[in-house]
Length: 84
Image 1 (spheres, rainbow, N blue to C red):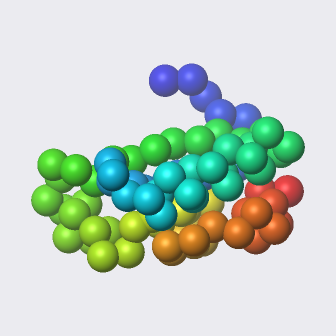
Image 2 (cartoon, rainbow, N blue to C red):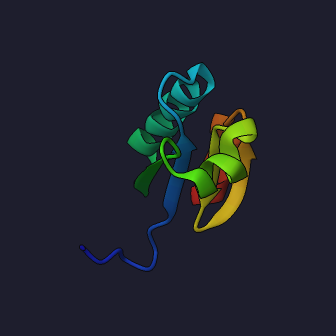
């Protein structure tokens, strides 16, 4: 596993296949990532009972540096503020 520079944020997208809100969140994340570099991790909840129980009713959930930042919708300006 590659190390991440300490000054680079990690954004985690918790999603499920076929979720249109998740696809929208991914598009916003990628557009902001084109402007401001950060690490992106994606977590698919499918097949994981614990993740399903925690996130199914709230996806997409976006975490920045391990802290929940967005649920359902990601705003470009809000994400920029978190990763700048």
